[in-house]
Length: 124
Ligand SMILES: [Cu+2]
Image (tube, rainbow, N blue to C red; front, side, top):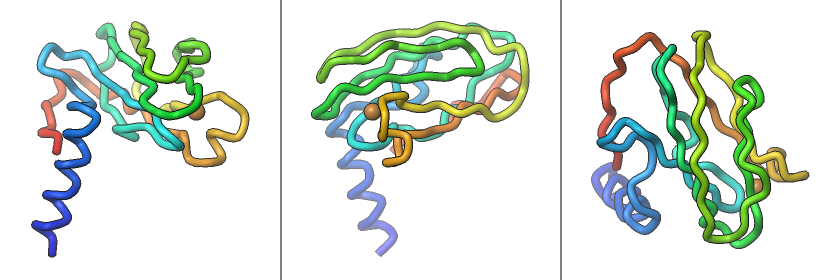
């Protein structure tokens, strides 16, 4: 049972490409109705974080991390945008799609700022 579930999860991951931490140290976050993939990312403190947000949904979405003044603005279907910021505090911070109704529908996530260096976690 567990193996089957894992295989299904990897297959889904393949459909939208590899999200989360990339080999170059940047991150990819995908937005759909109504969720972020991955829902949680870990980034090292005092290092520039580079996050590419891709809207792979069927309506407009955005990505906002209020704590770090990050906001992509409303993003059209199929578009992507890269944001950069340097966190200087440790902790867990909310990441949301600020379009009305979307956070309540589940478009929220968490940015965890940790001591660097962090270990790459295998995806999928
Ligand atoms: Cu949204």
